[in-house]
Image (cartoon, rainbow, N blue to C red; front, top):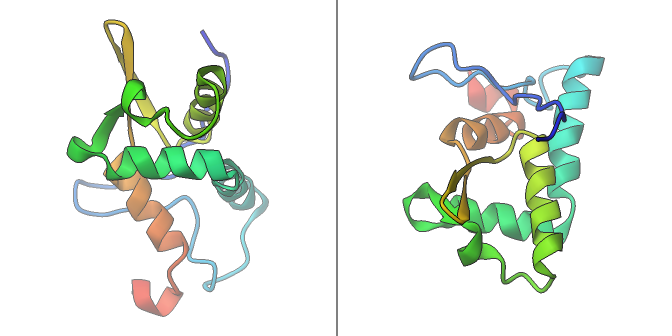
Amino acid sequence: MSNAKVLPLMEPADSQAVVPCCPPLTERPFSAEEAEVAARMFKALGDPVRLRLFSAVASHEGGEACVCDISDVGVSQPTVSHHLKKLKEAGLLTSERRGTWVYYRVEPSVLAAMGQLLTSASAVA
């Protein structure tokens, strides 16, 4: 079992609101903690294989994907597992083991928080 700390991107205040980890980039300078959380997310997505895997999970029918359905990204299976682990550590994916396979999902709140981070302050208000 991994003892890596997962930093949440956001904590929803209620079922409708999305509270991002950080304010929109154009609103104000980040605090050190906000920059750390955002940098972890962007660093995880900064690798082309990770970005392809994240996109494959996010766009998969039903909002989740079996590792068996998304592992064809031009690298070996152990490398796919490594990249999926990095995406999980960054708080971008969650997973669930079902029998032999692991299923990954991107929580809708994560996508919403990422979108708000990259939106101008005037567009959020």
